[in-house]
Image 1 (cartoon, each protein chain N blue to C red):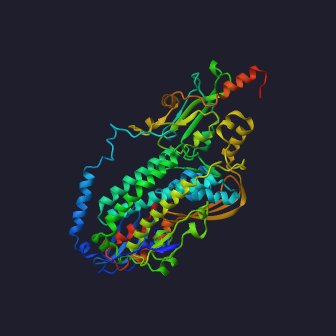
Image 2: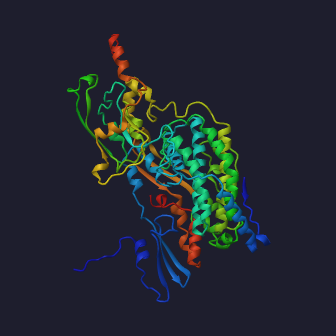
Image 3: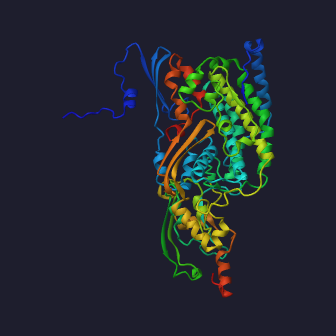
Length: 410
Length: 178
């Protein structure tokens, strides 16, 4: 009996087995390890000479099953996994996840905790956009930008290291608070970073914004219309580059974003150049927010006070009091206690809207967790966006979409 | 408020591009004489801030006693399941009469460890600490499993923050056992 090797998945079948292939066309596979695809994205092209006639993104090379892993561990244990979603802005992911679970518990965190979270999320936004900008520069042949961006990003990473103990995988949030308070003098150092950063940012943007080569590669390339951007569910700078002023920090403020003054930059045309310009402007707005947070840095507690079943007791209590010691054991082994119910929370991350949908049946472990990752949704427009462009323009388009595969495949 | 990012058309000099090359050279020249931002690793090493999360280690208290009581909470909480503890008796250790258990074996698989620091956070004895070491290398997989002896060698002795057992002992001597 002949074995049937048919693909169970219709999408995989469509991507891998072209039924009628036009002999005039060429098939080209870009990725999964290709220097300009920013991670393990594979795109299956059908080319007519240099022109793309069909593009099929194939994702899943970095799939780790994070959603399933979440069902098998307590809420706090999952925090290190959120670092590895958008690994260029782990602090923003930590914050989004913690707020989602806190909404489930109906828990309010103190003003200082909210301010630290906003501060770190905006710093993460700056570092993620610097990386995106640098990588976009490399994609279109501008190495210098990458080096300048990395120099600035390193300064931010030094600050992250001091705050959280790690440069990359910060795991800074806990349900109901943070892992630790800000160190002495740290906010002043953040302010000092902002002071020296703005002129350097202008220099970095000056290398590209008025550069004829860069403009030739990006202006009118990969134009996403307003209607398309909304229809494909794009979010973040990619949506705003097309002129849709959607920003969750303004539309549905969380963690005290409503207290801070900032503007939402939008593009006018929706091409690669607009998306680049939006990222540049967003960094300036983030710096504005950071300065405001540092200026009005609230004092008081940095974790929820009335949450004995959620946030772990302080170490000196654990070591000296029998009740707190038992509580510590209960919290670790059973997890932070959540009521039954479901919650969907989305936050404006550097790449777009990161959403966590959590179904709880009570207890310390989620019954189901769905992660809506911006990079995955942003990539969904590729089949439409690439068609009709040159292969070299696809590289510009990928650079301008600024996605992270760790989050796309999760 | 949303605002539209400005897009100005290129000026003549920008379109000609030659003046831009000169401007680029000026940046290059300035950077050429600017101080280095890179570091000659490993001869030079970056400063490690306090609270850095490096390799997890076991520490002893200022009396030189083992602190870990083998409660296995770190083993439980470890997200990648890198820690394995075999609990053992402490009857043969005269300096540990204040506790009931100790680890017979304590292995941390550094190929699995993700340096998240949850073990240090949950430890009720302040026995496990993520300290400053951040580079690891070995020729075999077995070499990168840190056993108890290696963990104590890496950890050394840290100043005790709370003197948990000393306080309890003092309280017991005053007739207050709780």
